[in-house]
Image 1: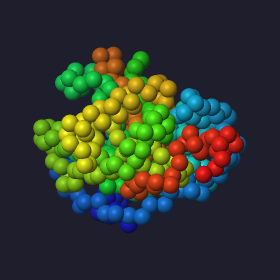
Image 2: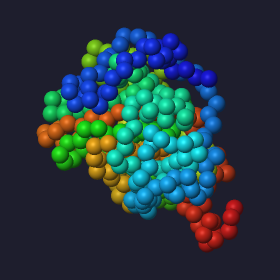
Image 3: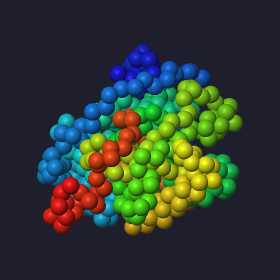
Image 4: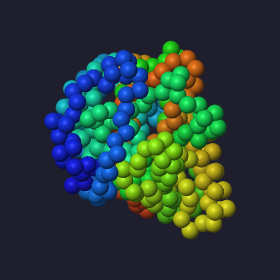
Length: 361
């Protein structure tokens, strides 16, 4: 068991019962930044419910009005399913589907925050951020809110390509299946991009794949800690750096995925700074330029994206700050500590074997 905060803090008695979507619409910025310190996260054994999923995903597909892949390598949109009403079997199938497709899109969703928390808990312990603000009574809810009053220093001084990341990858056991609902969208802009870590690995040459397999990289929260300090907020935990494999294996699919990104990855273990910077910059360019393994979502109010942080990268586009505001909330379950299995396969290899084009190995 790995509680993120004490049980009494998570009790319903201490939650304020309010609709944060209406709160955002009425009040705009509403987050609190408590000065409470949290205990460090404890290790836990993770079981991925995608292991129980039906390869045909019948519980989802048979009850949907429309299902289609948005691009060949990543992204599937499902209509006619309400995430607030999923059965356990449907959650198992969803976990398997998102492990294969990377990100799923659902339109016209009625799911509320408390239902989203229950959804998230079914996939793993909910992550509580060490520095970000949250709605009062909801420390596990990560809020997205930007508008015309948002300070522009960060966005004006950084390229949009630097925004690619996987959420809180500096944790020892980073997130897996993640849910984000957008309740307020600007009249135009504010899209989000996702990229496939599976395809990013497959697009590398065999020589580069072999070089990266077994290497590890450091992931750091230092920038977020520095931002909190500069804004007068505390760091609620002390942990800020972890080492993870550059190529990780997904526990459900058994496929290899690239696992570095410019937001939190800082260096490669065992290489000089010059070598590390050169390799990481190559990999970042590989991700940002991978238009053939990316998908772009144009949000509508009440759209939900569910993605697997273990095998995707994502990047919100801040092109709307002059024209409107954007508000959503995210629930972020944690999963296993990233690992690399040298016997695991690439998605491309698995696909070719399934089609009988190469022999199984």
